[in-house]
Image 1 (cartoon, rainbow, N blue to C red):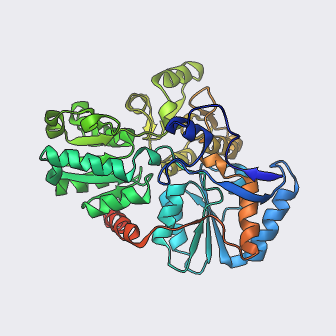
Image 2 (tube, rainbow, N blue to C red):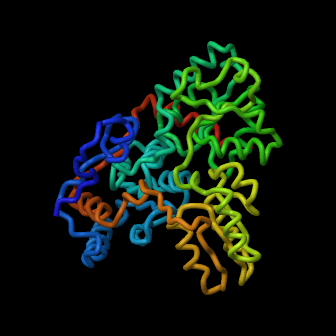
Image 3 (cartoon, helix red, strand yellow):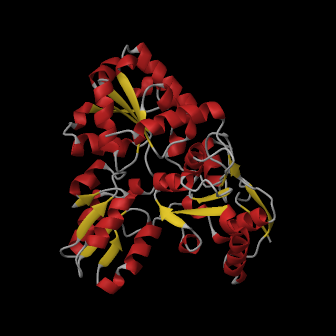
Length: 395
């Protein structure tokens, strides 16, 4: 059977939204769709696990497989290390002898790994259609236009860009070129503290919720200090006065998974499960974060559950693959761990990396055929690396 990642043609107009839904490549810097050539058995084929093991064993130390926390269990089984996006990119950089870095994650993560690894290493993404809706909400052209708006408003010199790790290499490069830094969900406050030492305002890309939650919850700003720049409206939908008065200029972007959690979700789980602890990711909406008991990154969530007392109850607001894995892991300790929302919510683009694609990738590499290599051009890499190095030097 020929496995493809694109859908069958439908009778719809080829609007950007339709192209997004169909997984077709409308913009090379946006939604990424690609065919996966070769004959592969169905995902349920029992031979897949054996084939993956055989190919990985044949490759030996030549391959290093990275598995993001949100990946399927069937993929995580073959990961040499697991973690969040930046941890994995650094893990890859710490393995200079590995010829192939197979990144089981999404496109921007593989780009970061390519930026941080050596020129002789090749970063592979098993399915090029594994993009990130949040990262694709800020294109280089849109951000350049935004900077023109800030320049015309007379405030660009006061603005320091801070970009979330969940952004494309182009956006990281823009950030580095304009004196800014990258942040993760773990060090966003440190990054913003640094940025406000450099300038009076911050342009936070591309996740408005992480920027708002960090500014208001962790730094004591008010919601009035924040404005949202909408790239689809003239001047971002803001007046010059609004831009001049704002401290935080938040890009209108969000995570499709974390953005679906609501205050109703929190209230409902508290009504259903007495004494439950609500623990959410800072990419959630501000009202959800304000109502939660604990807020933190993916690594924070894992460590919090590791340290939790036996018999405790937890509702987790993050991607379902991870929540389910944690629930199974800590069941023996009588820790009740449930998904915050009643509706199942996988990250659809993360889940494009499945066992058939991983098998195809490993078997191709074992046959000395490099597939789906992710390469960042040298100019983009140099400025993106500058922004990443600024983050690494944060106190």
